[in-house]
Image 1: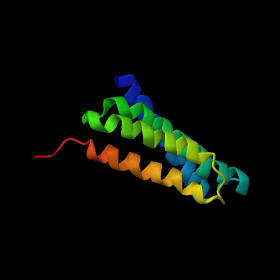
Image 2 (image 1 turned 135 degrees about the vertical axis):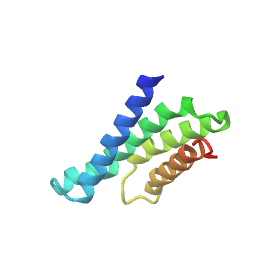
Image 3 (image 1 turned 120 degrees about the vertical axis):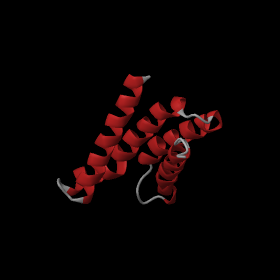
Amino acid sequence: MRNQQTAQGVISIIALVCLAAGWFNLFSPEINDLLSRKVFYVLIGISFFLQAPFLTNKNFVYAMYGAAAICVLGAFIPADSKLSVLKTIGLLAGIILSLSNRPKQI
C-alpha cells in the first residue's frame, strides 16, 4: 500500500514537471506540446488509477477509474478536436474526487 502511494506521488510530481516545462517553453514547441498536452494527462491518469483503490468512500472508486481513463484517452485526442476538452473534464473530476476523499478536520 505504501509503495503504491509513493509511486502515485512521484508520478504526480513528474506530471507537474511536464506541465511546467510546457508552460515555460523549456524545449522546442513540439516537445513542450507533447509534455504539457499529452504526457501530463497520461501521467495524471496513471496517478488517479493508482489512487482509486485507496479512496475511503468506496462509491468514488469507479468514478476515479473513469476519471483516470478519460485523462489517458483524452490525451490522444487531437488538440483541435471539440472532444479534446474531455481530458480536462477527467482531470477536474479526478481532482474533485481526490479532494472529497480527504479526512475531515475537526
